[in-house]
Amino acid sequence: MGGEGPTIAIIRGLKVRVPVLDRFLNANGVEETYGLPPLYNIDPDKQSRLLRSKAGGGGTRTRIFILSKLSHNETNFAYVA
Image 1 (cartoon, rainbow, N blue to C red):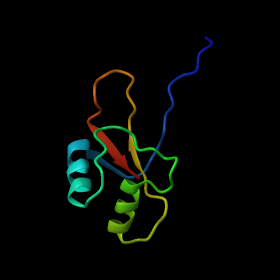
Image 2 (image 1 turned 120 degrees about the horizontal axis):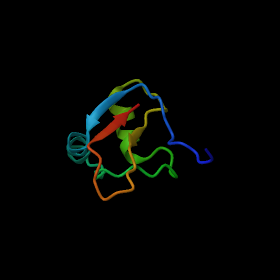
Image 3 (image 1 turned 45 degrees about the vertical axis):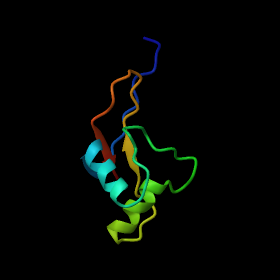
Image 4 (image 1 turned 30 degrees about the horizontal axis):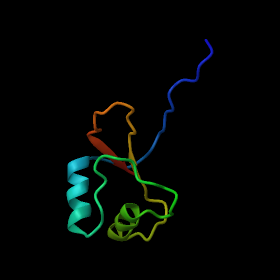
């Protein structure tokens, strides 16, 4: 058939509505996601670093995943893993 199929990721974490996550980030002085995936070229990104500090475990592997849509529709959910 030729083409590659969609990428599938299996993660273990929390499914959070983007507006709820953004309110939490804003209340803690971190820029909101606005439904856009974080830029991972800086490790750790500010949003993930905040969640790591709030989790209390001191882990370095917490990340926020947001589905990147090609259309103009915004995604409703973020995943914290």
